[in-house]
Image 1 (cartoon, helix red, strand yellow):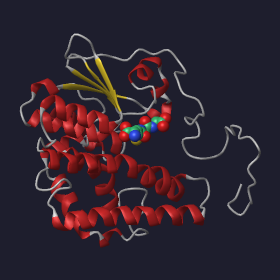
Image 2: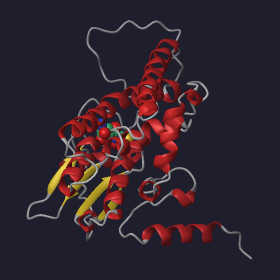
Image 3: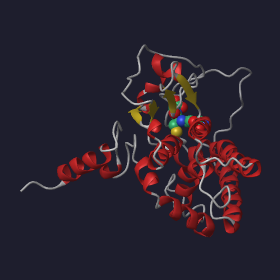
Length: 294
Ligand SMILES: N[C@@H](CCC(=O)N[C@@H](CS)C(=O)NCC(=O)O)C(=O)O
């Protein structure tokens, strides 16, 4: 297979299971559970089923921010869902998210559990439940939600478009890379212009819009996504970089980005979170395990 091979689509699409792309083992043209598997339930009101990807850490950052404000109702168990192993197709997970994607949240604080899926919906649900990180003034709220939904609509071009064709596709297609690189640069410029005049995405205050956008576009501006920093000339987006650094300094962000993370330095990985002290104990355990004996 090469990008030089011309492709004439057949009359009717059929599933080529060995298309060679990364994630081919988990991509399917149908939805629903592939196997029976109940989800674990911990002791806290919030049960999160997730993975430490940009979509996953939006929610763990929000939960850590809420806890930092003193909202004990935001205490949570964060269970690891290994998507490359197909855990998102277990029957229990599909009951929480019929779309089989992390993050998925079960709020078990009331008489009936409430399921919430889609990271934007989860951020809004938590913001409304705890009355935090979403302005009550109508105009500011509209601005915040506009940016929140901007992220939901834009990131698929960054991840599924640019990231897929630049880093994951089995061969490089100039047309696809060109199209999505242009779009990602346009999106970075949208943010850069907004952040030239505003400290945070929504305005003067830090909101769920920052929590949604930072994991994707902050990491992109830092050249941490798809090793595409130089290609996209990310150094140009100086206001995005200023904002990225400010958000990164928040202690709740530093905790939240470690939760359910399975890549990167070991000290940044907290595979599951069931107690605030897990951050200290697991980091210490890993540091001592990494020390050479003797
Ligand atoms: N729009 C969704 C996107 C979630 C999403 O794409 N999650 C990915 C990981 S970042 C996933 O679970 N993929 C598994 C799969 O596609 O099977 C959200 O914001 O929650």
